[in-house]
Length: 229
Image 1 (cartoon, rainbow, N blue to C red):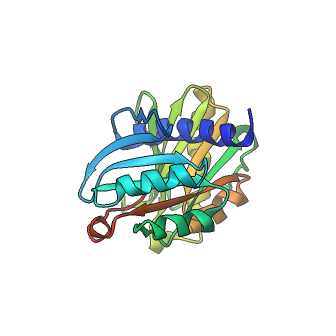
Image 2 (image 1 turned 90 degrees about the vertical axis):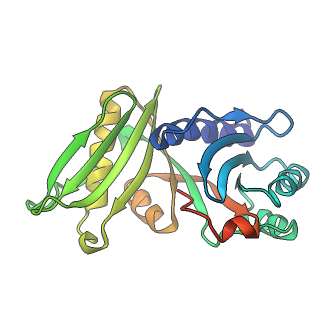
């Protein structure tokens, strides 16, 4: 499998788990472009196309389709600046923050230290999706995350630490909780879409970037857009 095929395979595997975490219907594939179409039903984000960059023509074609629509377009690419310029030239508004598609052999994820004693660990959920959280002494959620296990893939999602509890290693603890549970369920590969801030944590744990994810929408939808996670 060439590099483009490898990235496309990882995007499809990531999307399956991401969709499960968000409770979304199964994605469909656009025949002409091989882009994945996901229905989200959100204001300004009724659907989103996930495209692995296969050249300027297909990027332009999908950009024209998104223009004037309530949809988003996310392009996974190794040439983020060029793709962002193409999307802007097509009339779309490109989100300032770019995400990273990251992966790891879960057996190689660094083992975090135990959380400070004032935090209590909780795991919940059944089936493919599990949740982890750390609670403070008042029972408030200090950090949280989710994982969807699909075959041998574990897709991490919504990893978040409350601002008042940061710089205490809680994000690493949550990742460790999710990673161990995923391995118990037979997962070997971890996948996630990282924000710029989150990528620093994941790199420290041993995760590697695969490609950059550039997202754009039309300017009308941008005014009412929700989170891109």
